[in-house]
Amino acid sequence: MKGKKFLATVLAGTMVLSLTACGGSEQTSTTADDSTVKETVEQQVDTTPTPEVKEEVKEEVKEKEPASIDFEDGNMGFVSLYTQPANADNSELSIVDHNGSKALYIKNIDAKTPYVAFDISSMLGAKVADVAKVEMTITTEYPTGKFSSCSGNIVSWYGADLTEAKDAWAVYMEKKNPNKAIAEIKDNEKFVADAGNIIMLTIDTDNGVADGNGNVSLYVDDIRFLDANGNLIDADSSVEFVAPAGFESSGKDLSNLAVVTGGVKVEGFEVKADAWAQAGVEMPQEVIDALVPGSVIEIEYKSETGNMWVVMPGATVGWSRVGDGNNGKAYINGSGNIAQITYEQIAAICGEDKSTWGTTLQCESDSAWEVYSVTVGQKSPVITCSNAVEVPDFAKKADAWAQDGVEMPQEVIDALVPGSVLEIDYTSESGNLWIVMPWATAGWMRVGDGNNGKSVCYNGKCYVTYEQIAEFCGEDKSTWGAMIQCESDSAWEVYGVRVGTKGEMKMVSGATNIDGFAKKADAWAQDGVELTPEQQALLVPGSVITVKYTSETGNMWIVMPWATAGWMRVGDGNNGKAACSNGVCQVTYEQIAEFCGDDPSTWGAMIQCESDSAWEVYSVSIGTAN
Image (cartoon, rainbow, N blue to C red; front, side):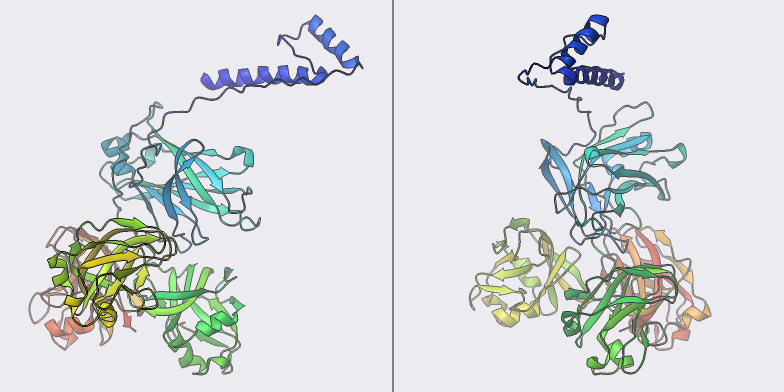
């Protein structure tokens, strides 16, 4: 009724303005009777010049609808990035002032696509089952300040099995920016309480690049959860995001891969082709210069089979595939959307002299494929931090080149021993972070800034080793001083710091997935599968078992219950230690052999997973370590 009343008012006002525009005189009635029409016609033929009179027209302002979430309290802990898709942008999320209120700002960082998730299960509790409609106001923004159209979906992960549904949204005209996005929750797509249900805002089409405006960033405001009767459902904005099964919120999937540091992006490498077709670019000199021993080519992509490799069509030795399985095997993550080819793999096929490789770099797959980006940089291992001691009260932030930190208590100083590592949870505009030891006897000292060693930073974590600190502050840690600070070359924020035992994940190629290994259990309970003879044959020296999982403590290991040596845990900390980082756990052939014997035929065919807390495993694979 309110909408109809507003429309009638606008139509009436339009008629008044139309009549006024004809003669330039004010009309006091909206009824077009004979006298009014006659007067209007007379005014139209009057040629006497009259001064233009302008009257301020007051438009009726539509009353703002109440919202379940309006961001006025500044809370956004219930929001997280979904980073599994290969084209996912590592967007910056913040609460900003916008159009006279506060809104969630989704800033595009990597010129890719934001996937922004909202934990409605935590926000709504049992009331999540009552949701029949979701609404939110979306405003688009481009770096040029100009307008381009874009569209996407509100994706629902609903039900106990987290089934996916989509409802389209679009901002297609400048005068319709902002626009309201609406998701209608069908009866067969209902949310379920305590099932980890979420909604996710995605972008599927962004015309900004084609229009020369760059990639879109979004303002999201006034999220409304409505029941079947249109009643607003209250939401708790103070909750923190709880990742559902299969959701990784802390960066791209680096399982089986290395971290690429000092990367040089190969510009223009956004290409696609059908199976067994190649496409690529001529490498600029800076990319060729980056191809040195220890470097890696990283490809972010999608393909129907999950396979990807490179082609060197101008190589002196002849047109060459590298990483296809015949000429080496690319390192591919568990999500099948990032592939890495090492300098050494190319050199093994095309020769040690890179000047003979040619300047054309192409990609190829055995299925239809699309590449989103290619980067060349140095490879560093994915680092793990176990048995960690938290540095208390290390929640700090500062501007570029400003330091802040805490004085370390004795238990943290005691944990700083050879083989230990500092793990820092952080954000910074440049992505860089390092530590400062201001009280060191050797003098005020940066460690890990690139001049005094280089910290390894990825997926919202930064690592500085004991050995790096000792190199610049001295072997005797009693001379380091108790004060530890953080710093960056851009505005930064640190959420927590801990000291623990350093481990390293291995690069793994040719990984074979073990079918049927989607299992979950409570703490200290085991579940797994019986390996086929073909899968058992994959367990050879140098092989690695990789587990993608979640657990409440973050711990995971394997159990060999049929081993001749007896029921055996491997990697639990007593019988070796599995390397676990960011939802990925690795146990090596050599670790199993140490506790189950050198003859793998005595290990038994059954392999299980276990943790000291409730756990869930999404996949297990066996591959060859770099």
